[in-house]
Structure formats: structure tokens, C-alpha cells
Image (tube, rainbow, N blue to C red; front, top):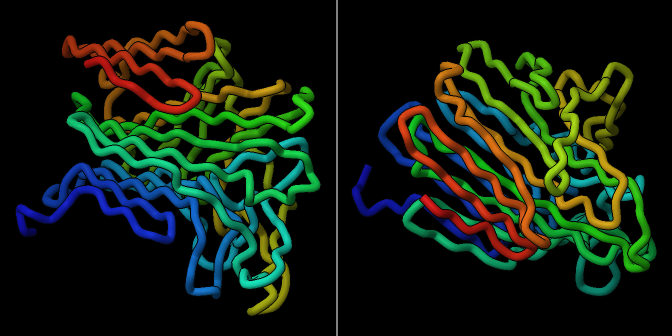
Length: 293
């Protein structure tokens, strides 16, 4: 691979692709989408969703071509509402949803991305904002990791149920680990997933998809979700959930840092103390994710 090949690429459609490298099978790859697909064709209801590949495995994935609905993607469900809206004028119905890629920053430690998905939900549902901040930490002592903050609210500032969801491959094993979960792949590479709402840890659970289906009108009929993906989720009732989530891949438990989460005003601060002595302090604000290394 050419030494000048970039590790980050931003597309006008609202997609961002990020890598930790090009030469090693264990290099990490992240994609993020929040925008408008100009092809006017097969679009999914997936604004602010992302994928994460590391250690030779896909931990958070896009559930292939046919599952187009937002419950088949790593998105927020807000007060029972999924992403979908009807468009008029120049925007065809086939686009289904639009988001907005607001900001991308490539810095010495990794990549920060912010997307706004409020336009993906129908205006009449009363959703005021739904933004996701994602930081891809390339400079980790063992393996790159993700940390995410989700903020959302209704226009009347009412307290409602928020569910943050993450999609993984159907063959992966999901086991509870305290209030978090561990995703284990066939190669035994693993990922720890922890979610907080403010400074309170929230239970992450595997959703029961036994009878859940999705409709694929082009090839006809309903299909079982479990044939295409598994889903984990965390739920809170709040005015703004202030979800923050860590997704940390590892081979050995010794690679998992000591973790502390606290709040300072509206900011959520994660401190990760790794066994090699590295300390990462990540401040997740309503607009940004800042790193002290």
C-alpha cells in the first residue's frame, strides 16, 4: 500500500471511512453515515449508524443489503419512533431518510465525527434533535477502540424512552458481563460494550429477536432478523439520555483497562487506566469528544 494512502476518507454523501492502518490483518476499520445518498436508489434508514472492524473481526456491522429498517441498524429509537419520513419535491421516497454530517476532525490520536439525524424522523413525531458523536481512538496501547455519545430530545422537552442499539453478526456469541456485554467471535477475538447515561451505568442486553422479521419487498416476503444479525441495546427514560458507550476489542482480559465514569456539569468523563501505564481521559461534551493522553 502507498505510504500516502490516507487513513480517513470523507464523502459528500455523508459517509466517513476511518482506518488504523493498511498493512496488518488486525488493523481497525470504522465507517459512519449521516447524510443523503445522491444515487436515489437503495437507501437504508440508518442515519448516524456505524460499523467497527478490528482484530480480524466485525464487531458492529451493517446487516447486509436487505434489512433496510432502522431497527436493523445501530441507531436510536426515540419514544417508540423509528427513522422514517415521507419527502416531497425533489427528494425521492426511495431515499427514505436523510441525516447531516456536521463535523469531522482527524487529530494525532484518532478521528472525531459528529452527525445529526433529527431529519431522519418524521417532523410530526416531535423530535427536536438526535446527534451522535463518535471518536475512533487509533492510539490505543493494545487495539483501537470506539467511544460514542448520543444526545436526543423531544421539542416539548418531555421525558420519554430512549433506546440505543448496536448490530453485530448472527454467529457471534453475546454474554452479559456485569451491566455490560462481551461479544465473542469464532476466532475468540472479543469486544467489551459498556453504556452509561450520564454517570449511571445502564444495562446492555441482547435483544430477543426470535420472532422479529423484516420485509424485503424487492425479493418478496418477510425474513427472520436472526438470520441476518443480532442486536444489543440499552434503555433509559429521560429528557436527554446522554448515552455514552465504549466498544473495546481485545484478545486477553489483561488488555481491558480500569474504567471510571463521572460527570462535570453536562460533560461525561471517561478515564481508562491501562495496565501498561497509559491513561486516557476522554471528555464527551454535547458537541465534541476531547482527549487527554
